[in-house]
Length: 218
Image (cartoon, one colour):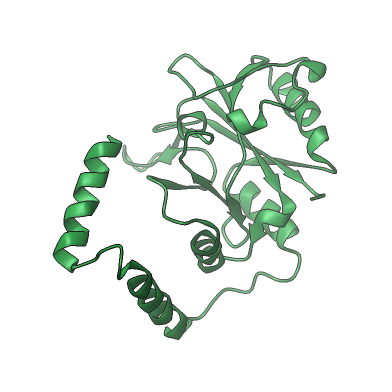
């Protein structure tokens, strides 16, 4: 898959005349265009991004809990699973595997999700207060399957990574990533569809449940 993607992007670069020698200049020209563009009207989010994010996430049918430290996240996850009588076994992003899951009574494996995994635990690249949206990048240490395949998706969101709107999310991605990942997923609550007789059905194309644990401290 990666070889095919690289080949396709390589053909596009060649048609545009992009080379290693002029790549930096081309990127600078794109950045200049983005910097000059006129900003359209934006909704009022307010100064308390965390409170706005939590309210919008709940409006999108996510459930939420705030904790003080990252070390408190496993206990919060355990409380949620126990309260909903869900399995205490889960998969998590490899970068989260070092948290004390077993101390919270959970069996968590740091790997990508498979079809039989019922709970997936992820972090986020950032979150959008305006819409209550999680922004998740695909990658070796952040497998997208953990947020897409299980019936229950639990996301751990550092408060410092909550931005006001989509514009700020893309600006953050451009400033922190050397290149775009293969996928940028925007998750606003559980998967849903109203295709059949305009009846809303949750879990049609992904998780039935999305639970968000916001970590207040850095």
